[in-house]
Image 1: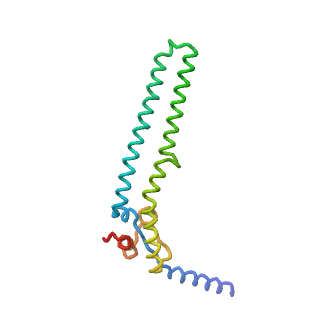
Image 2: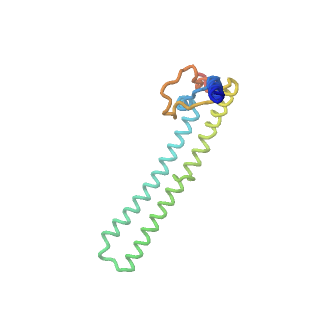
Length: 171
């Protein structure tokens, strides 16, 4: 009997502390769309990415042309010439893969450029969210844009406009 009463008291305590928690929602997509420096950074990244992609495409076309030429001349080449052409094609393919990795790899130039342009903006947003959360006593903040699990949330707990105002982008 004492165990049941103790378990009920413990359960009631857990429920009471759950109701005391305050939550906040933030829509990162909405915030980022309203920050002009983010849009500018994205445009810069697009321009750079397209430039690098055209460079990669050009080299890929060269590799394909080398291979087609090799295929068409295959019957006329000596074994030494075949080996030499194959080595050239393989070397060009390796340099193509290296170029792709250099520009678009996990530690590539695009990643570094994105980090240098976008990360400061994101850090500024996260700092603003943290300050608002600490001031208003929120224990949990959720990103509405990236969470597919949020089916409905009251607009009263959405602090996106407060974050924009704190950053100087009044809405």
